[in-house]
Image 1 (cartoon, rainbow, N blue to C red):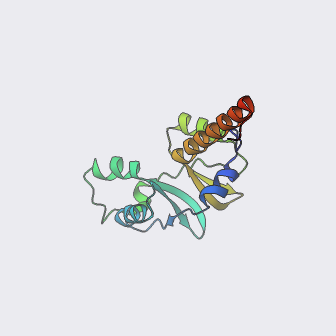
Image 2 (image 1 turned 135 degrees about the vertical axis):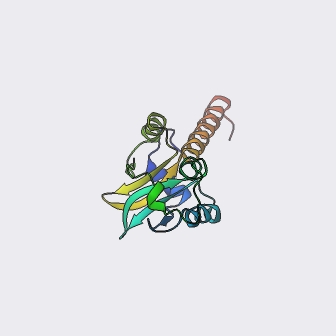
Image 3 (image 1 turned 60 degrees about the vertical axis):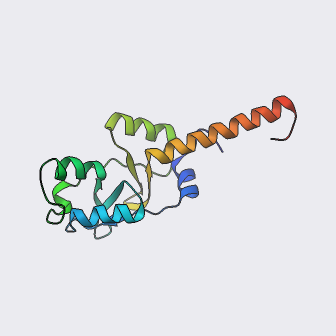
Length: 148
């Protein structure tokens, strides 16, 4: 495992599932989907095209704190439409920089305009931890001459 992996490496390990919801769905339906799939964000698509993203953070800041009802508020009312996304060839480091600079936790992965997955900050951190563990094991094997 290379410490300087790319997004396609991560998707190969974690899978390419990217859950989506329509803009006319209710926020309650979006939150239910996130809970069912154990994810922190879902993509918002219309006609198979990415039109936005909605996260737990959007829910808390744009629904709960404003006293709105999740059962009557449409996803289109609170989605983030300026979606920052990456391609499968972006590096882990590039993704981390984007997430840090833009204060986001999820990056849709697109090839052209086709959605091919999504990566979270947790996915990137897990990749780095695994890569570091692999590197340490290889170094220990090299130094000691013993199998890792």
